[in-house]
Amino acid sequence: MNEMNNQAKAKSPRFVLKDCALIAIATHKRADTLKELRDHIENLSADSLYYHFWANLLLPHFEEREYINDFAGWVRHSLADTKLAEQLAVLDPTTVNDLEELRYRLLECIDDRLDESEYLRWSHATQRFEFIRSQIVVFDTQTAVSHPREMAELIPRMSASSIFYHFIDSRRRTQDKIDDFRHWLAFFGEAYQPLINQLTGIDPYFSTLVELRQQVATDFQKFFAEDVR
Image (cartoon, rainbow, N blue to C red; front, side):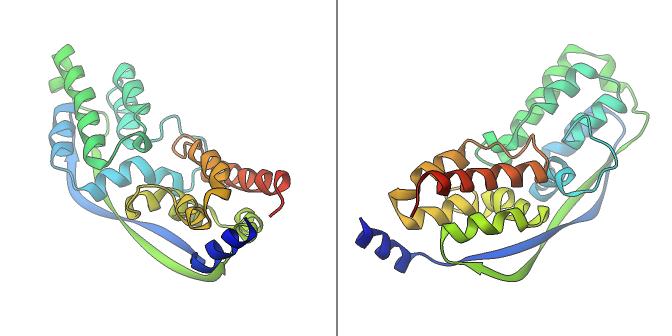
């Protein structure tokens, strides 16, 4: 077993810690009605769809937001449609294969609601929806670790935006669509499968980044407290 672990360590890469910022860019696309919102979403760029579902985790807020994604918030507060807002609010981008499937589910909810209510086709919002697209800027922190035990010590000190980059945005970058932590742990062999399984159970969408960092840190710390390696 020790020989296998040593071989895994020799083959495994270092985990290079990155940080990021999500830059908002105006698209000059706007919607005053639910039908206009629906038509824009159908042709919306993937970067814009990504922004309206994920950016609120990175943006500073003085009070807790009732809805995470911008579409649900706008439908509730500008169109006063609680029913559709609640349907859109529970859409979890981590449960779909890609942004195109998320787009399909979003349109499905809106189309069903438009079929139910003729009033919503022409009703104007009290405030128009402004479509934004995102561009992620990545920074090298000049920090790297070689072993999962080092990672357990590092995670509590990671910035919230670094957690976003490695646990959320990574799902767009990795071939297996998982976070960087699990992707990296897989290089160390089956010994770390229990930790990988624990991290798999974390849903990052309905938590703040601070809460998410605590969940990831707790899973790493519990693993090493129970199993000395």
